[in-house]
Image (cartoon, rainbow, N blue to C red; front, top):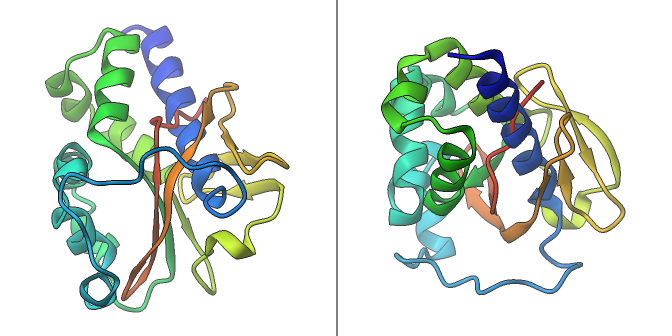
Length: 184
């Protein structure tokens, strides 16, 4: 795999993380999901179960499993903020990087780094109302920038937009984004 593919994928991963805070402050795209989720149901699921319950996250779930992160992201003692790219976002990044899903999933270090760029672990999950512009450190160790317009910008300048925010889970919160963020 060429370095440019890795750099491009890394840039895409960063963009996704920045979008999570935008729900209540920006005009929203159509937030209808293929499989509707209800807040009462979501509050009884961890972040992995929440993703598994929605068809729009099937590639994300496959990626988490391929990277071996499902157990860690199911940790009941964690406080994750997850910027979850949709299937369309994954298909877009695969097209842009000229990689197949199999190629990406086979590169476990890269896949783990990209997925970690979409997660923040802190004392409390970050809900949309609490998001402030500035830089935030992702679980991957990379920096995501949140703009005053509450967009996510990765280290490569890719911009992600929030599609839906504040999907509550037992161990955090999930924000749906339209791009896969990529670290440098």
